[in-house]
Length: 319
Image 1 (cartoon, rainbow, N blue to C red):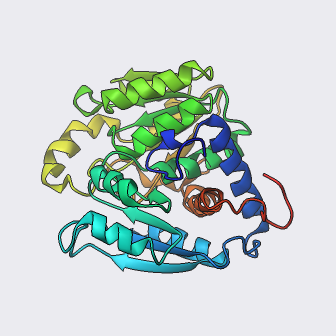
Image 2 (image 1 turned 120 degrees about the vertical axis):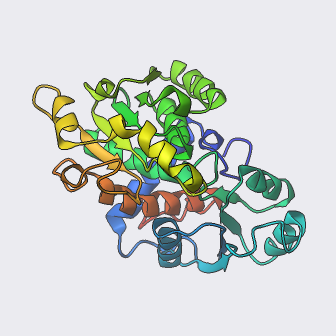
Image 3 (image 1 turned 30 degrees about the vertical axis):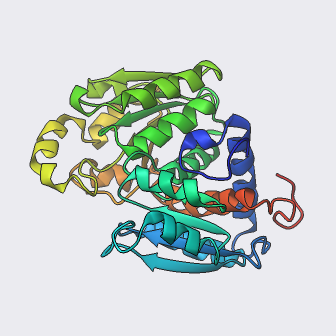
């Protein structure tokens, strides 16, 4: 890591570091289900303020398989900072663990934890970013397309935390991302600016569009739920605003280039028949379950890197 051992944002890894993590993740996937136990004699805390299937299981199973002791702390009934201060919580927990992985409601909680911790803090989802998802996504896209430089990705739907990390990560890797969304639901403008700055150094690009037909000509079409956890009160308004942005078999066929239908991605959970039709998510070009698996390998590689265990690597390979 260049200046920090935390991973709160996709910007905490530069392009070279991101590629290093992805290379290690590929090696770990090749070795699965019997990877080298690179994390023996380490302890990792998993803190969850929000429910999860993929994030919790991928961290728990993945890190355990590498030899780490994993402790799960359910904070859904008592969010961080309620029962005791975030400082006291963090400085106590770091005495027991080598890394803290947290899935939180507010990004500012992660930032405060990082101010007080001397062990790595890893963002397992916040209201601003989902950087571990983006690492898994990059790994998936590279495997499917054979490269990252020059790959064209259309993200259609809500410019949310998943979109933010996808923009920042793929821009650093030389990909081009077009966000197709209603103007009221565009990504955060500061994150757009940061992504464009990263893209300017790698030959990538970041574009915005409001017309759903703008997904044409891309290698990948990516969407996410229109109603994320925390925005349930806006459900009716959001469903109405995004109706034109549903990914259907017809829209994917129309987006085909020279008869080649784009790959489809979704971080899950998906609301079938809402943001995406069954025919797409279950279709031949869908990568959704590859994404789910690759989250685990990418996270394993990330934690291994943050804890400086890459010299032990997987079965003698060098990242």
